[in-house]
Length: 472
Image (cartoon, rainbow, N blue to C red; front, side, top):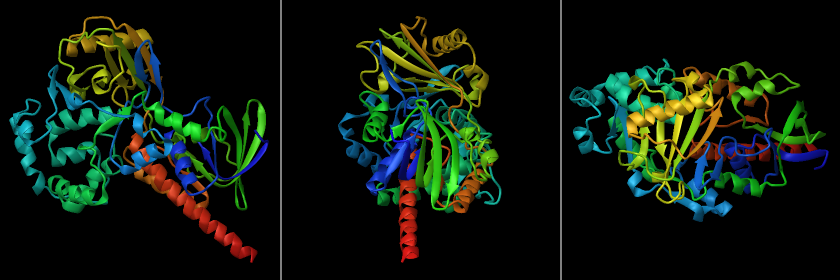
């Protein structure tokens, strides 16, 4: 590796957001280099086959919401490895009174469902007649749902859903930041029901799919397939095990000095993109005023621990005929929910076997994620025995604690994003992106990466034209 490099764009962080942005920038003929402090790329997307089981340490899947995903897969020559969730995995269960109840998938199923009481079902009829909130006042997701749909819908639909997506709690999440489309439906149409109809018409025109109707997919060898393909594309331009010494502002760009393999290097770039967790900015040495460091540190990343149980034979006393189940906070359990991984996709367990992926901790019970390994295993075994009738010890166990897992779009999050945008305007060529901005799912990260690449490429073109004018 050369001691001194020059590039159009230097990306700090080789997770899915950084790698995808690099890919889209290359489509604009922009030269890219990437620094990563860890010894591996991919962030929390990691897949590993162990003892005939496929373990996903991070995201198990994502939703097919945009054609942009498939264009990326075609570019990377991995489209043929995409695997959609099995048809018999459509059911999603919610625990109520210690029993698994299928989440209603349509109006008729909703009316027949035991998950919600008769009064809760009647309460939904009021929704079209409830006025929108004041746009000047930020509202939590919990307050939004209680106001429009009622307490029971919050407790047994939204609360477990939020635990499954964000590992968060609806009382802290900002509806405007965490669920912007939900917020916009109310503001634009005055009602969620009316908005659902209007939004469906708009999506048909844009060729996008709602997250409610989108198909779930992964890859034959897990989500790391995307990472491996992107790493292959940039194999000689990703520098792992890189520790940054300083970041310096220059007249027409930036200089980043770093150490890799005990050697000192420096890269000069026209544009500098950070795609790292917000708490990681505290570790960086900026040799210029970086005014938003403290605000970035306010984004919460609660701990979450992934617990994988593998069985050579099916141990469950209930049919494994769905995605898995989520647990409302009111049920007072130790786990957030369990994905029936071997029901969802093929080759997750040996023939006749079962793979279960359970999550604990999050904003609801952060202390659970930090407990000793044996205690965590015991908590998961107890809840799976109570809810699925599993009284057999797993044949294979793998645990992955994420001390800082998923960024929470809590109340006040938009103010942080506004500060980021102001900082980017103050320092042309400096950009911040990642799953704390634009959504936390893999699909959201890819869409945000495309948006960011368009912005950077456009700004670089303007900057180049300006330099040519100055020269003339």
